[in-house]
Length: 513
Figure 1 (cartoon, rainbow, N blue to C red):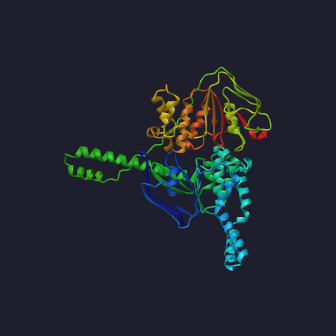
Figure 2: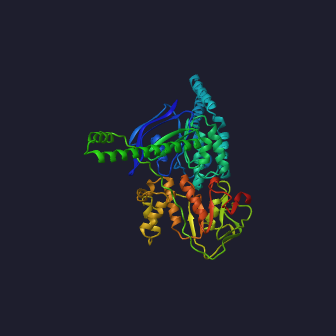
Figure 3: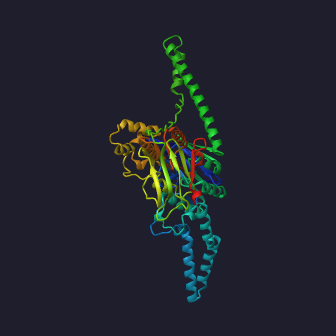
């Protein structure tokens, strides 16, 4: 039975049609993945089916009494609230029922009214059946599975990083155990260990879920059907991700062949009409002309823009660009128990690995002198020019366009060059002139990439550069890193983004614990 039915959905954003007359269903047993390039409307589709955005046309019908759980990355986390307290809000209705039950028992002790005792008994039964008395166990299990015990459940939510915040929100959502889960990029900020835990959780989940992810390996392991959004169309494929891609390729090939055949027939008919329209076969020519006029002409197949990521290399004569000596890093106290000693040569590609929250980003910020080292030394060659990719999508002016943002950073650069660089990442001319706040997470990430591409550098420092990016852009980014003549120091939770053929060093911070 369908838990969600979407019919004749149409929606445009700015001057771009995201979907046109699209229809699909979500069945109770569906573990559905949504795929597509950055900017095709994946997150917008989630917001439409939750009612956050009204579509231009179409109907969205949920089965009655369906409890929907939506991963809201922008949920309000109030300062002064611990992680544990925030997670307990997942059971707010049960705690409220407990309060009512306790009050009824207290009132009964005063007047011995059996009606009060009966009401209290019904509430207690509800609490027992809802697993109220196992809440602490549930919180501990899910929090541990997603790595929150590494942060500390007594930590104030106002002190959390963006990645830690996302993990807390996801943990609360899973604790709510809704009928349907809606997850937008849930693996962002999760390391391999916690992704594996989430995969097991989703595979054991009894309800339906819809998940957006650019992590193909993750989708392959959790989905049994795929929604593909491309060129304004939403197509449902049954089976796992590889099956969907195979069906998609076969459909695309068949369509291209049908288009080519039809175009050939059209050209033959036009040539016939031109040749015989005024001759002895004019009647036949007019007949073909009428046929052409009523022909349902296939649209020319669209072509996806392939991103091209290349970085601006600044020549250096230094052999060693960066080295550390007995380095301890962190905030009030060191995150590493053993001193960190390493160096980065002029052309080395160096991965910093370790589970989420262990301090990978903190190490990068220490190297960049954004936060002071606890102790030890960092030596950077005087000839080093650094280009830094910050995973945060915070902007000084959200209403600024990508072009305006880059122009403020590079005031002497010609607008044409800025436009060309943005286009290389896959952004359209319209997106370049749209406010940053109106762009998807992936499109905003491409603006950050363009900024790095424009920065003359011999050392790239990249903090989770694959977050939010589609496969085509990740492939281009991997190629760009490998072809960059200089050094690269990077952090990523996506194990399939790199391999040992081009990684020179892997600095595993877990080994320093």
